[in-house]
Length: 200
Ligand SMILES: Cc1cc2nc3c(=O)[nH]c(=O)nc-3n(C[C@H](O)[C@H](O)[C@H](O)COP(=O)(O)O)c2cc1C
Image 1 (cartoon, helix red, strand yellow):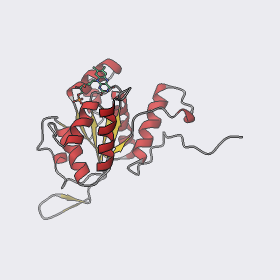
Image 2 (image 1 turned 30 degrees about the horizontal axis):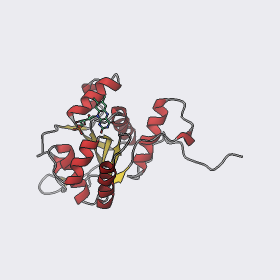
Image 3 (image 1 turned 60 degrees about the horizontal axis):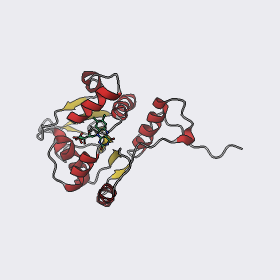
Image 4 (image 1 turned 135 degrees about the vertical axis):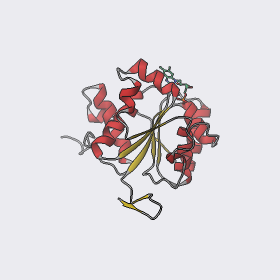
């Protein structure tokens, strides 16, 4: 790391923005943060109110235990945060999991929170934006919104189980999905079971 004349950090450490929204699967966001810690990547976390609901319903993690996993925690309403500006350099952003509401807001550009503003910035800077969209079944509007986002450059990566990896537990299934999405940023987390061809 170097400082320039204004005291800003040049050549910053690798950073990833992590959004957690209120779709089922808060554990995916938690494991993304664990993986980034393992990889030495600075995480910038922003969590929606609905994500705190799913966290409490689906996991034993408290909000404080979740945020303690992040390097920097941003307030949802803080549209003046570093990650609201494209001049703040990052590897990109992952929304894990991504609700239909958050996905739709990103697609319209009407960004009412820091999470969706940071996603919009990621798109405008042409950095990877990975959305782990979780809903089922999808109606045509959902599918059209995903198409629009893909056309804008986002990567739609629903957390679907990779059964070829023969997971022994839900956590192994989660970690496989998390690891494969981190692959999209060029980050190789050891938890991924990689396909080595058919066994005879
Ligand atoms: C337990 C629980 C599970 C939910 N699962 C989903 C889901 O899988 N996908 C989804 O789009 N919304 C889901 N929702 C609804 C969202 O939380 C809701 O639409 C919320 O307004 C999303 O807000 P956010 O995008 O700001 O987090 C769920 C809500 C709860 C309480």
